[in-house]
Length: 237
Image (cartoon, rainbow, N blue to C red):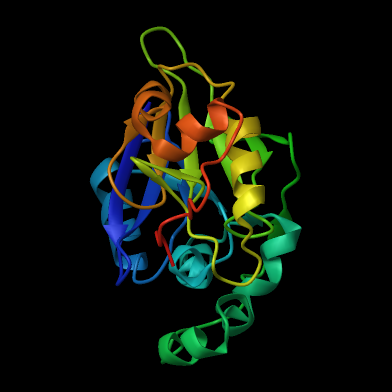
């Protein structure tokens, strides 16, 4: 399996292109702010043919390049219905104070073909099997994408802004909920095998085993409680 990832834009949001191998069809995950050029470079370098864009959530730093990327390759974009409005109205998703600062000259809107994701959905795209888990808390429509392991390849979780190396997503923007994100961590992440590679929306890759041992939020949810006064750090947009 080929995973070509790079951080894009002002927020260093990780965009991933995933394919069975170089020279084959691929899925693009979270083409966010200023990601279009990097997407085209990865496509050319690995001789890839995009068949879909899939989105972990609707924040601007994850969706800002959806329209040009989908338009350039005539592919659909998949997003959870609770976050779909964010593609056309990111200011509402971020709050007016933040939204006014960030809008600038960005091209906002939906691509021509938008399809909606549901919890437990299984997508077969580009020869890949992606299992969707609804994981609210960072936003109402946050999801993760899990891929099964095979032979000597461990399972992979594209966690969006649910789980990071040593941290979790912020919950102080509209639609965020600190209790809900802890429930999502318990339901989505804790059951996964320790060998699962976590490719997050920001920061370096990690594993479920590493986070189970060292991530204070995952440790708290595994213990069945949340320490008084613990607040999610400000990660992601």
